[in-house]
Image 1 (cartoon, rainbow, N blue to C red):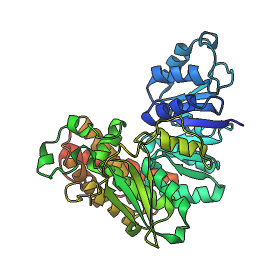
Image 2: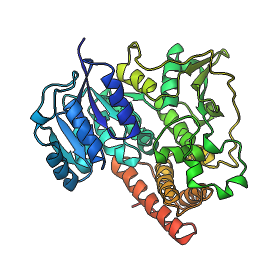
Image 3: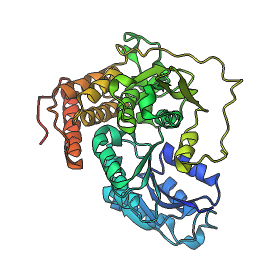
Length: 409
């Protein structure tokens, strides 16, 4: 069988590490052509030695020089991974230009976009522009620039395959029928660590409590998004662009067991659900092996041990970020980009203990209220909206009041 050639953006993050673990379990069936990371040089160096990509990107020129020194001579690395060619030292690039170069590598058939936040926007767009199969673990790419990404994909023939467990589940469920037969999409939410808490109880919520997710092991930023339900607000927007469904046909149900990852109701009343263990390697495998299904090397779900499955209506009065996501989707234009950027800054401030948990949605709403939306005609337009929103969010946090109304230039 011919090997699938992969460029992995965000290789040292949780998605990247899980992807490479999965590839290790399919010896001889994948070839890693490019790896891109931020600042985690020790992990990246180990990945380079194991998978021997042709090109590697890291966050800065100083880190690139350090990586080159750390790698030493390939002769000292030991035997190459079975799925890799016996390459010498890779080309080492850095910064946003390096990310784009990895996404555009001519040998890569699949580009797995696993960089968290707006930093993944430019390389993901480049992969779409080149008509690649894009395994999308960066939900922000569609939230920030959904109309640009999807229109460019239609133009170039690029395939967008969601890696997020919820959208991956919807992608699988939708294979059961035609688009015109869909009544609604239902995204499931774990509820995060604060499920069932009242607004009064969350007034004293700590960072340590917010980072204790009950079912998933994820990065810090996305774990906080789960705690605020902003991850569902972003996912509603992402589902709209991935599957062409309006806001009124996309719902959220809190499902604390995280067994059913999402479901589709068809017009005849039938529900199709996707279930699997809470292990991101399952949706990653689906995206990497699509349109086929391969025998999985990952532990399977034991249906006899999973117990009762429950579903609840989300409490949007306590967890206001979900409703802000719907508001941004309905407003359209540059508002989703502003929502995402303001959220990133607010979460960053919470992680730095400079902002209270309940103030996260307050900052986001203040920034949205002060924004003058425009139609994004280019990637530069959404980048400008993103930059404006970050500055407005920082000002809001620093002053403790809504930023002044300013326009995007």
